[in-house]
Image 1 (cartoon, rainbow, N blue to C red):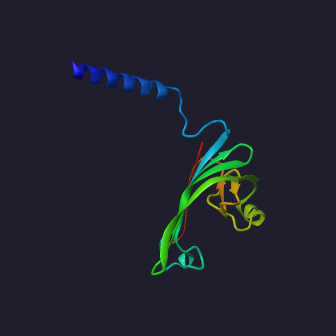
Image 2: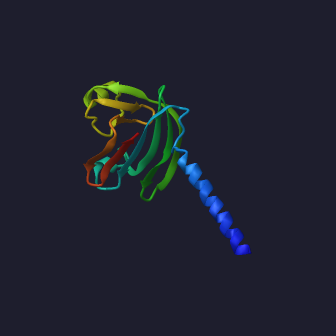
Image 3: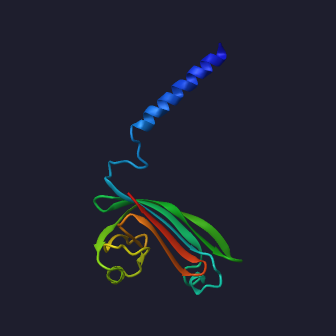
Amino acid sequence: MRPVRILIVAALLALSSLSVGASGVLAYGHADQPLAQLELSANCVNRNSPLCAPDALGLGGIWVWVEVDAGGTADVAGAACQHMPGVFGGAESIRGEMSWVDFSGTADDLAAAYPGVFVVGTDPHGKYYVLPDLGFAFPQTTGHYSLTLDKGVFLQSQVAP
């Protein structure tokens, strides 16, 4: 009798999970009117590259996920990690809300308008999500963008609906 009860409970749990899945659960809510998800992995792992020197980018990386919402706000989650051989190494959490700016123009125009903001991919339509507090600008066109600055110095970004 006990195996039958277990089977019935398991069947009810399976059916209830199907009904939840069928309701269209999103990875993030719709209350903030999300426009896009942005992902970034930027790594500097070549200690011989001048870009990975302690006075430049340093050894390590940054990995973030951003939900861009209508109205100029964004939710951010991720981590940054830096390694200084023989001195220290560690990771910092990146979490919170920040603002973003809609920008139209060339990547050069964007760099001139927002000094210190790094463009992580060239948008074919010249439209960008600029996150000044994070220091990055993302193309608005959905897709995968990749950039290698030097051996062991690379960025990967993804723009998804």
